[in-house]
Length: 136
Length: 359
Figure 1 (tube, each protein chain N blue to C red):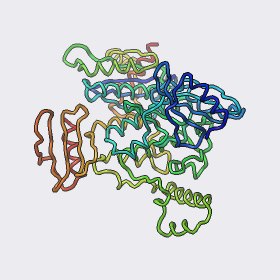
Figure 2: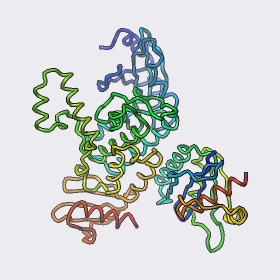
Figure 3: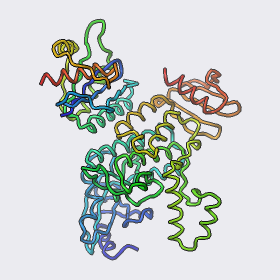
């Protein structure tokens, strides 16, 4: 089983793929996809197509999206919600959402080691994938 | 003149289709264009020899597997008799070869076409199929400018263990270096060919005349060869040397407005070592999308280059004496912007891309 963890920051989605059994990240396949102009039909279509291609090519079975915050000082911009929508529409597989609190509690409980192969900005997506897998 | 079996079939189809023309390009079978008298749809009707060998139905069988806007669709297929078969597919407005020969291609359209091809290729590769003959003539364009992969005469299913197949002998100019060295072809070979197609689309020099690939000394040797077959073999050998040396692309021939990032991606895809290339069509698409967003939609003009935003809100003209840069916002008069000017066209285009696309 291959799971894809997604964290969305501003207009950019960071995607990290992991092996569902070993829980190790698939090396060299992480990607970041951005939505430059959320009001451009062409931009939305192209971003959606790219996401669809990535998800199908990596033979993804599960996508876990780290939920964007809807209220408070750190609430996400509308672009983040559009990105979530694009992912939902583009994915031909199961989708789960996990909250930042659920990820934090998973980290506290399981204390997963962060692979050295991953960059710092990919950690959130990786942890989201792990947290989403444990929810099964 | 087509064989009698095909002529009979055309007569029979005449009740439903009005035949408007015939294609002379390509050597495999016979290709006709027609309009359906009922629906008004324009179609391409291809006759090919199968001679009781089901393996020769590879093209229609492969096309029938996919339902992608980036792969030519198949409407129907039938056996005609006397060893001939035909399949019908929608008629496209043109192909990339004609587009490149006819006019300069705007930078964003070139990138979009390459992305369309990569999307089609992704469907093929996910089914473990390689095309093996991607070149501008085999990529069709519909009337909305969307590119679709056609001509599936060379497709093959890759081996599950070795992840490759034996190399095709088609179109020497587009064959990847590893296919000469090892005789094998993998998905990375298709990605090499997309790199070459993109190179041509953005204005790179890739001549089709055999003589263009020979040095003066080689040209003398070539002219002294008596037979056509030997001449072809000589040209193929010269091409193979350039491909395997990695000197098939002349990146200096690319227009000045092509951004450095795109030049690097093209060169990366054309590298001799397949492991140096971008490893999948989806990753290649992501890269192209990122690069497209960092550039204005440039096109070459007599004076230099003209670029515009995709929504048409800003147009930039670069060129003339001293590389003058004029910026025109929608509904306003063009105004000179000296902050975007530099010593040469390339530097001006970089400045415009950097300053205008980051806003």
